[in-house]
Length: 423
Image (cartoon, rainbow, N blue to C red; front, side):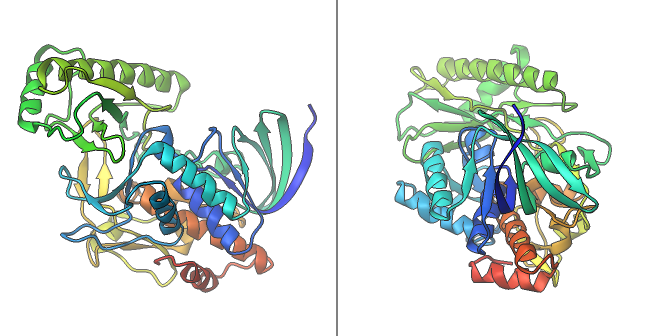
């Protein structure tokens, strides 16, 4: 089938996760005609594809939740409340961090309502297959969907894919993993049903079971403390983060192996609970998610890179586009996360150049693609922060279109504040 020009847009956003939603809605609220491209049949990114059923980074650390992200993220939280979720800050007993708990089906429907309300042209089951570049500008992208390929023209683009799919196709330089090419470990969060809604998890007993299992079990559990355990809203299922896997490269074979091994681990660990934990006799695996949880792939080159110093000192910037408040969370070894708190005011600011592609004038980044060294990346990659950097990227793209290709941080800041964002 020949390529065909279906439509022209002001802004095309690649990826429908937290960053992509932030970008698409932010650009639309700024008056842009927006096309949002997502490879799955639903929006939500890691929350819906990998069962990461908690928004991290919306609040700062501390005894009381202090908001760090608002804007589009708050618009979505308001939608979640209409679906029966409370949307309130919840403190994890394991880490002490403030999160917002999710239900995947409520989230999917809430995201649908949000993007449709803002007139965004959503292309599900669609991938960016190619990019047409002239000098320092992307002129168009080729979208591959169920009905073939479309040639879509736009003035500005946002890569919120998490994997730098658009940036890579457009020829932007990138690195894989950290400075030595090492990738952070994967996690497959699982949902377990069949237990009483008010059952209290005996963590001491669980830790004892894990210790015994690790002596001869097929898949030793690295989170010997029992992992992150939360009872989910609505269903009261147990959300358990203890299936952790190392990965050495981005080959499909490696991900296929990880997916299959992760499911085997999930069933083995479920059997452990059934046999050793009172109240789990009739427990069953509700879901492992459509995809294993991926923390890191490609890092496209940005005009500025956030650093470990920014995290430690809580650096502020006159061109700030967003706040990053989640502690730097590094998974260099499967099942053994290392946290480094954010210093200063409890958040560091993301400068404008950290969301701009290094070699292209009309490409912005949202989410885990923004410029960051390994330590800073451990903070900015989470979904709550991704909403903020995504919204900034979308508004910056819309401002570029409105201003006849201008680059003006102050103008973008003004528009973000008008949308209720915290910068």
